[in-house]
Picture 1 (cartoon, rainbow, N blue to C red):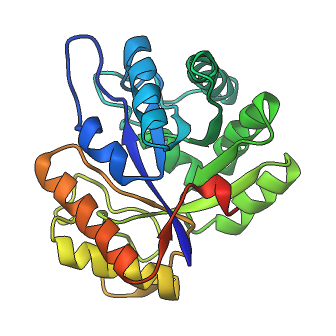
Picture 2 (picture 1 turned 90 degrees about the vertical axis):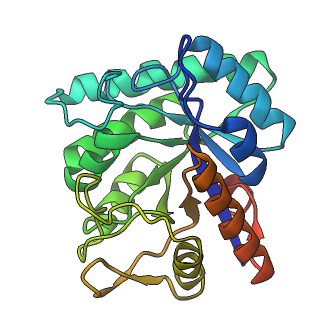
Amino acid sequence: MKIDLNADVGESFGVYKIGLDEEVIPLISSANIACGFHAGDPTAMKRTIALAKEHGVALGAHPGFPDLLGFGRRNMDATLEEVRDYITYQIGALQAFATSQGMKLQHVKAHGALYNMAAQDMRIAEAITEAVSKLDKNLILVMLPGPKKDVVQEIGKQYDIRVVFEFFADRAYNSDGTLVSRREPGAVIHDHQFAADRVIKMVTEDKIASKDGTEIEVASDTICVHGDNPAAVKLVKHIRESLLSSGVEITPMGQFL
């Protein structure tokens, strides 16, 4: 069995340091790098790419809404044209920094509110897919396997873009397959063993228990882990060790999809 382990990184900007990229990146196989709208800046993008390159980690663009104050987690009433332009602008910026270091992007994963809205509104999902397809059809698009998973896959086929689905190791799920809002208690899982057990169940059975106890299907090829504090880094290490001890190979999604 093979699985990709990804994390959102490169979120520092200016004099503000966010996350523990130096500790997290060596533990993952794919990096979702902030592109300057919800977090990150040109220097952070350059440094994060260099760090990923050093550790053999595949590169991914992590474009979000232009909402630095809200960290991209607030819904925006953007037009579909604006969504396409946001995606194009941010991927283009990261592509340039990757090219300057002899690297290529592997994937694209929308951030925060844009990511969640795309799982519900297929017009937004299509706008993102279309923008990615016009830049590079070899890019893999990472999406949430929510209630409209089949439609998302069809949109990917329409634009000749590979779509893969993602599982969040440290987030609680609603019974419809969407993520529990961070504003609700229990939305973020801190118990290392519980999170690791969920990951192994997802990898081996494609299922987990939702917040209300209902068993739901969350078949995914990549697992997102968050490592923005020391406790979270320990969680990433525990999940990685649990996967390896279970005979699961951790490798970039582009190498087995």
